[in-house]
Length: 197
Ligand SMILES: [Zn+2]
Image (tube, rainbow, N blue to C red; front, top):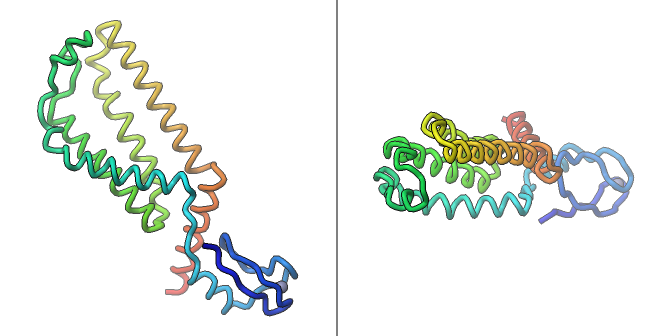
């Protein structure tokens, strides 16, 4: 919730939605340092709705993947792939698939935890998570897929999905207005906290 406060100069009330907040929006005069410090220490960051959604989705999916980790190291059932017309050699060794699952799970849970704690590092973790979910598998499958026409189509599709996902995540986290405001405030609070120590 945005907190309300009264300007000591003009007596008008105002609410603080984002930081830094050092001037009264009514009379434009500088607020006393003590008041600014109080506003900052009481400030609760407002996570954009879509990032909250990502946080819960990350927790749910991360926990499901954590529960399924023992199976991630099992060989893939190739009979399903054969029915789809995909040759069985187009699957990664179980140890690679399993290791990748460990990384995916870790990034899902870590990014949600950081979002939960209003940790500004969640921005980089989310971007790395999208990378881990899209790039390594595509890259490791590339040599296996290059042989056939179907393989080339699968490779091209996953490569395009990887590029689109990464571009979207980058634009969303580093250029979208609500994310800029949220992370700008978190960075500001972190720097102010460091100054006080
Ligand atoms: Zn004022």
